[in-house]
Length: 377
Ligand SMILES: [Zn+2]
Ligand SMILES: [Zn+2]
Ligand SMILES: [Zn+2]
Image 1 (cartoon, rainbow, N blue to C red):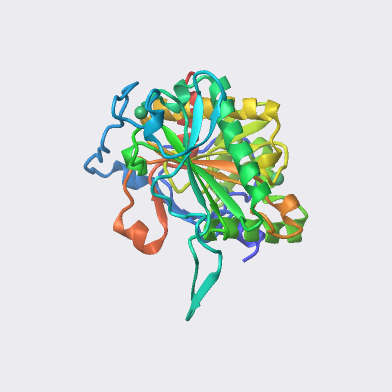
Image 2: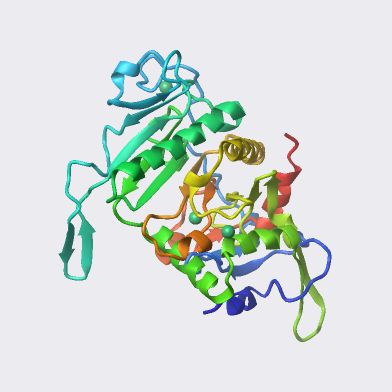
């Protein structure tokens, strides 16, 4: 399926006219993720009107200091070996330690195992923990922007150090699980870094599909989406009656915007409150981010999280940093675009979603973006 057909499938970019989506109409449509078409989503806003028991995730731990917590200041001796701390002397702001229960370890070879059609790679790699802040229950949007810039700088510098010293590594995922609903097993605010000799399927899909788009159009699909978000409007008419069906101001997907970054509500959002942050400047590799850009990224991230917290209330979430893999091909620097995916966990996937792989989103991304934008922060 080519990109043109895909646009035709969701029928949203048929014509241009000023206006915004009519949010009192319900939407029921399958939206194709332009980056990873296999990761599509069923947007069905009528579902949100049906009565359902409110899922109440276990509350997150909001204490500032916990005597028995190995990640709290003063308990440094209780953590696995330290990798780094910032600053090096005096009270640390961010610390990085090895994971006590790594999913991958560097005590293995990287030999691939083949059995039948299945393939496994011996669990070679790195699994490290970043203690984001000395305060136990500190939420991200209450961290100082200078602190967040330090944290993001730790992600970048550690990724660079690992790639530089180990040619076997092909991909490094930095992610954060915040709150029990997001699968965080340690309540103290932290992120994780997993460096691996293989490229995970969802990243490879992003790389392959963005490369295919680049080969066809000569453009980066992420840049094209940013351009669309910044400029396009669309009106959808009924094909037979010619009546107006829906107006879309594509700019309505923007949640935050700064000198160097944009936070957008993806058109095909898997999660009700999902937000993606992308650099406005085309760049495939997070390691290329400058100090000035890091400060700006920190600001957009903090403001986006503050908006989410205001709308969702005590938001629990995962975020994932997606940067280009190593040795991914000569076109990747032009075709891939690094980004951060923030996925708030407000509902538990149901059987249909797990069984079909089709996410169901009950709030239209247009409405969600508007509500996020309206938050005064
Ligand atoms: Zn703690
Ligand atoms: Zn780009
Ligand atoms: Zn991604």
